[in-house]
Structure formats: structure tokens, C-alpha cells
Image 1 (cartoon, rainbow, N blue to C red):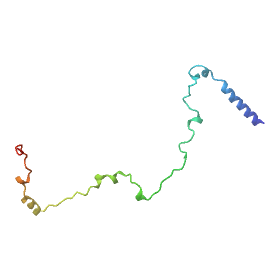
Image 2 (image 1 turned 180 degrees about the vertical axis):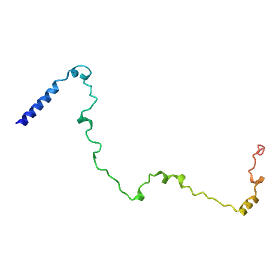
Image 3 (image 1 turned 135 degrees about the vertical axis):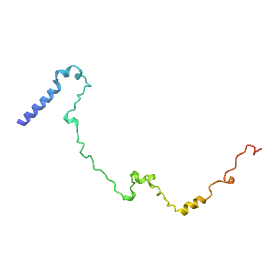
Length: 119
């Protein structure tokens, strides 16, 4: 019986709070219907914790050779160049290069366009 009396008193107080307002809520900017308190109530602030999991994550499984590799260095074409070839020249090679033909002949070059050639 004491429990029902406490419940009835509690509901009566809540009903009176709806109709009895604080003096600053009757007039002034707080009385405007669009007025909202800037600080939310504790029950409205964070309804669910950010750490709670709504649903389990679905992790796709596949063979590693069928999964696209997102690593940049594996697809970087500048790193896929063939190795630079280095030559060690011997004295005979240098002498042979000096003896090679170094100048151009007139037949090696294209013909010069002459404006009189079509007349």
C-alpha cells in the first residue's frame, strides 16, 4: 500500500510540473515555443554508447592470390624498371671505339628541300 501511495504522489507531482512553470519560463525568450535548452538532458545526450556494436562485421574471406593488392609500391612502375647495365671498358674496347667512324657523309643526311625543285 505504501508503494502505491508513493507512485500516486510521484505521478501527481509530475502532472503538476507540466502546468506549474518557473517564472522565467512564463515570459521572456525562454517562453518562446522554439526555445531549446542548449544543454541536453542526460537521457537525451548519448542514447547508445559509441562502443556498442549494432551488428557483427562480415569479413570476406578469399584466397590471397585473388585479393587485389592495394599496396602502392607493388604497382609502382618506376620501381619495376630493369636494372641499369654497367659496362667495364677494357683498353681494347676504347681503342676500337676511337677507330670507329665519327663523321657523317652527305648521303647519310636527308635531301634538302629546294623551292625550285617543283618548277
